[in-house]
Image (cartoon, rainbow, N blue to C red; front, side, top):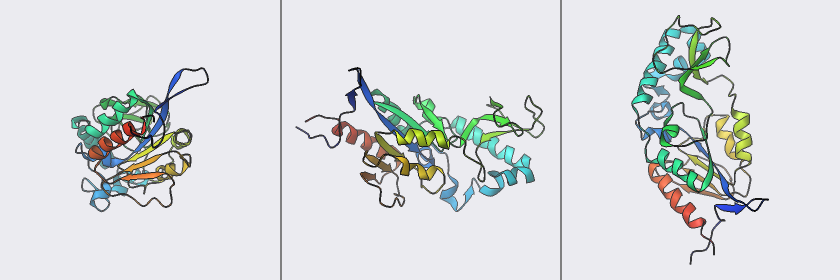
Length: 250
């Protein structure tokens, strides 16, 4: 008989119904890297050969909007060609036993295509665009955006992406989600980009926490933490095994 290291994945709510534990997962570029999507931090600040501050800041867009739009047009094509990997699929499968929320720093849609049904995008979405004059005027985009393409309000269209030096509108929602987690997992992020990196500090102190990365980032003194130093695909598979073991009752 295997002793539970934590608790069952299901419990009775106040009405006596079986409810799933809240599993919150923060994902970063490392989970999509194994699908062929590169990260700028893997190449000394360059992203596909571009200086990230030229293509991912409001200043860069103001200076050369054509360059920025073309850069994201190419990223959109890259994402469309990419496929979810075993890590994306493994996290989606956890919905069978847990109430899963994915908070992702990634702008791709690989979590959704893998089957995850509750995904919060902190830094925007590559398949959406918005007006430069009204951030709430958002629409879908599968093709290219060009200089001169206008939103309904007459503003130039831009990718619905949170650039460096811009506020992160969804961070408050993410903080609320993390603060109610009963299991918290980090997959494939350097924990260097703020405010997303601060989310780990909002997980309740005594809930189980897991960090999966091929190079575990510095985390300080986080209680109840298990590190899994493996690429995302291997690490998520190990996480699933651990959670399966932990869920067995005495």
